[in-house]
Amino acid sequence: MTAPTAPAPALPSASVLLLRDGRAGLEVFMVERHHAMDFASRATVFPGGKVDEGDWSVRARASARGARDLAAYEAALRIAALRETFEECGVLLARPAGRSELVSAPRLEGIAERYREHLRSGAGAIDELLAGEDLELACDLLVPFSRWITPKDSPKRFDTFFYLAAAPADQAALHDGYESVDSLWTTVADAADDAAAGRRKIILPTLANLRLLGESASVAEALVAASRRRVEPILL
Image (cartoon, rainbow, N blue to C red; front, side):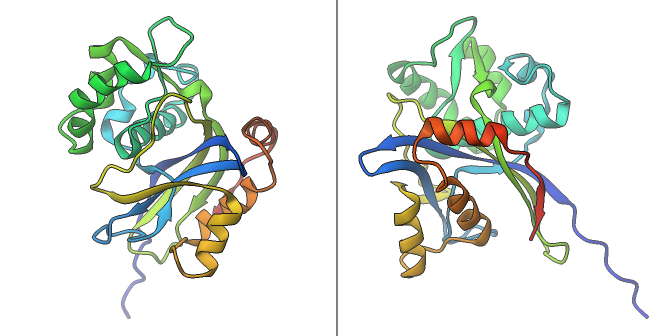
């Protein structure tokens, strides 16, 4: 008799629901994954990805406001969440060291030119960007929202932590053209309609997160509600 195969390890990953208050109500930013991706291809999802080796860097953690006092695992997840958001949609939640305001959109243009592709390709790590630009990641702006774990019989598994964050008003979010080929700001109702009509492929965890987000009417309300809710892992 063949011995049962051990489940693949669930890789730690992180995803961010970028929020803004639109004319029709609360909106969230989503991207459509490239058809060649080996996980959730063509699906419309929130920006995110697995934790990279560089996200564990002590230097990155020291330059991540709101993560310095966290356990290494929790800090790496938040660092990965912000790195992936920058790579995938060009939004960088970071501050000039010692400052209270986020990096400005004009300055971000140069940072993106110097580092975005460098990070996306795996040629560099986030701590290089932070040191080179004298920035601190704004991990304190992330609010834990949910946690989903891929089934044990899946060939590729992820343990994904989802976070909420208010999108900077002066930074434009746009898909990267590599991992994602389209992007949009949408309300929960419009996203649900697109999924029901077959206009967009939206997988279960994404739909569940959208429904949960739909319980709030504004960015402020969503952030407060999430901060008061206990996040428990959900196994698919």
